[in-house]
Image (cartoon, rainbow, N blue to C red; front, side):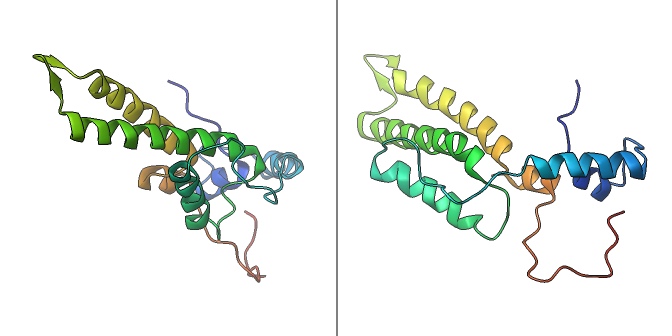
Length: 152
């Protein structure tokens, strides 16, 4: 199975496993810099209940010092927060009503399992799991970049 594309910076951090030349990496870094997106307007783009907005804002707050999220990510973050809200609601219904009705499994149990799988996919995509963050090698923004660091 092919691996997901990595930024040129990530390739450098990983020891350049694709054996690209410095010229190729510099060219790719310039191309990636052209694709940078602002993080000015990060408001949730959907009308959501308080719990969904709370989860959305919690994630943004946790990652505020990283440059992980920008305006291009708001819909994916909103989907994650919305699915999280549905997951919590299904869990509440299951706790209130039980997992079985008339000897049959409650449909909310299957719904909760499907939501869980989708949440896992989005969490990995967004870098919300320890393994995903490790693979992204997220580092906090430096106020003053170290002049001694070489790009390569």
